[in-house]
Amino acid sequence: PSHRPRRTTLSLRPGLPRSDPPVFAAVHLFGIPHTLCCGEETMDMAEVPDNVDLMTLRLQKQDLEHRASNEIYRTKVARMFRKTNYISKVDFVSGKTKSPSEQRASLAEVVMAVQIYKPIKMPAGPRKVRMGGCLSYKVQAEVAVLGEQTLQSLREKISCVSDVLSPGDFSENPGRPQTPKAMDLYKSGFFFIGNTFYNDMSSSSCKDYSQVIRDWAQNSRREVGPFEARRMDTTRFVDLELRLGYPYVYLHQGHCEHLLVFSDLRMLHPDDSQNPHDYPLRLKSFPFGKRVLCMLCHTTIAKWVTYGNERVTDDPFFFCDVCFHSYNYTADNKKIGHFRAEPFLDWNAVL
Picture 1 (cartoon, rainbow, N blue to C red):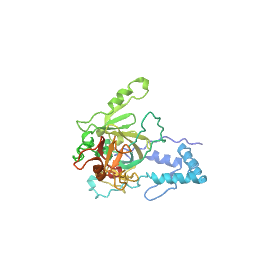
Picture 2 (picture 1 turned 45 degrees about the vertical axis):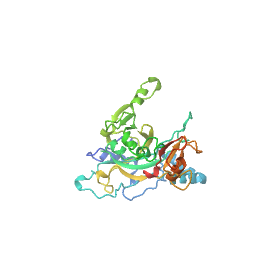
Picture 3 (picture 1 turned 120 degrees about the vertical axis):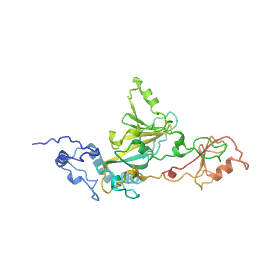
Picture 4 (picture 1 turned 90 degrees about the vertical axis):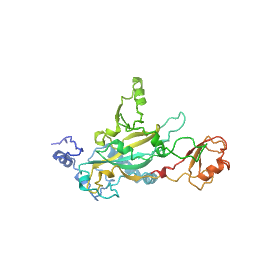
């Protein structure tokens, strides 16, 4: 007689059993114990089982067959994998000293790998945007978080150029101190996960960025929403309903948008860092190619960027510190022409 597998749920909340007999029964019923790996065991990811009817495996099998039969496609895929090597570490290990036993995280703790993407630059003008077409999605960092930690702790671990720059026009007085930073002036931000905005309201100066969006969505003709709003400093990761591999949004500085993807979720194991203070733990940062060079001398890293500069050919135009002062100012520091200037910081400097 045929057996119909019973649906089982694996509890991941701390303090609860990691599994129960029905789970083991389901594992044996599906006939996949040989695919469970632990420690340094390995599994051939190219071997697709024949008795599992999953769309993802069917597509993977088709793609593997396409690679085997088409050398050009195989080379293209290999090149793409080298550029986007976003594979989580097996063990989440920190170089810090081990914590005392009373401060160690429980092995029943959930640990997640989160990929933070570089901000998206939208094309200017009334141009139709197609996902995967003109936009470039690049992972800037991968971070491990514990299930009992809050969204606020993840936000504090995300590095972005727009946070560390000092806003304003420096063209009239480029020698003035580059303080305060944008993160000290504009502290608001939110995560958008599962039709809920999780706002940063940790400071009295924070604003609810999501309010205007929720008001806009109340119009029934738009057929979006309804959306909810909560605080990120009181929301733990175990309280969220997440989809692995699904893109969520992190917004800060008013318009700087990052995609956020939860790429992996598992239980903490003995080879991971047991110190809860090590988390969120930065696993890897991904450099963004070559640094931006001065567009005048083409030899030194850019330190300034000008907008609306009438005396150069490109807008924006990047200068090193020497070229910026010698080209745009007289010997007595008088500004030449009309332009707006801001300090420039390369992305690789903040990762």
